[in-house]
Length: 440
Ligand code: SF4
Ligand code: SF4
Image 1 (tube, rainbow, N blue to C red):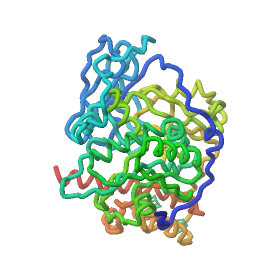
Image 2 (cartoon, rainbow, N blue to C red; image 1 turned 90 degrees about the horizontal axis):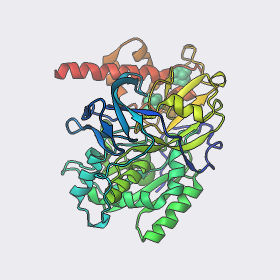
Image 3 (tube, rainbow, N blue to C red; image 1 turned 180 degrees about the horizontal axis):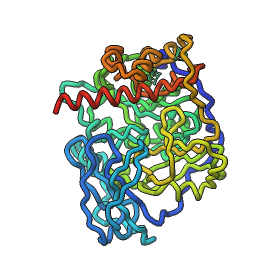
């Protein structure tokens, strides 16, 4: 255990303002706008009509097809119809607006206590599916799909991802410190669902209290789940890098973790899986780190899904004058937002108000090779970005552009401050779009 993956960097961590803070609850939002597209796959289909009384936990949109996820009300109140909000990925999406009645009344149909040890693998997958759980590290892939690998793929190991290698973010750290038993019980359920013999929680060694809490919980539960501390190195939390670091296994180019006999789930998804299996709670809130120089009261908060960014930032002492860039997620892989008219989704792990964004100025490449040395995927980012800039998609594909997982290391190390990852992201989107057109 503890193999060193190729490339990577060690950016300044900047976690100090929130890493010692306990988990707190965000103020109740006056309304929420719950997006029907907060996961990878088809948008969920709305189930409620304007004017209807809604209870917390009630399914407000059902999954559409297999790769999709249901959405549930995160407050009780009155449905005010479908509105458009900006998704953190930048595009406009449909969302159900619910006005808060302040009662926080749960739907009695969803609160059911169960003996989790008696659940079969199929029952676990079904509950996770019904609870709308997705990858909460930011990827938002529906968890029930991940828990259903094809029978020909033999999975021997479940990895829980608690690396949280992005600077600033401490949401997973505080969740692991405060809810280690729930996370490990979730891991046991996921392990059972996929029939794996082994489970490991991987986290960076800048979270010693989380590691200690998990180890103590594993002892209390008599669980055989291993807790592995890894050196701090970005992107330790990327799936392929985490698998290599923990098991020394390479995931093939264009392949998935299951091709290496592994499934990776985020620690927050395991927590939510346990809450759904044991108590019937669907995914209606998550932990979000709100921090950065433009935030007066940094915090790790339980935030209701669908809460508006502006209302959340106001309670954290947001200072627009001290903010040059607002980012959803971490500074390496997160996305800049142009305004506050967007709502928290299941993959929102952090909101950063930064005053020192990298100033990209499109200087010429000086062929220093740093991006190549740093790329954990073993790609040639300088060449790929040139292809993206000049729209040479066939060559980009030949150079495996689709293996880029947009970690941002290349842009971080580039002395010419070239927006390498943005160009590669655009060329990947264009390649995918053309492929989809070919299929149609
Ligand atoms: S963003 Fe893509 S090309 Fe750049 S370092 Fe990461 S994986 Fe490599
Ligand atoms: S790091 Fe920047 S300047 Fe150096 S080779 Fe890569 S793109 Fe060119």
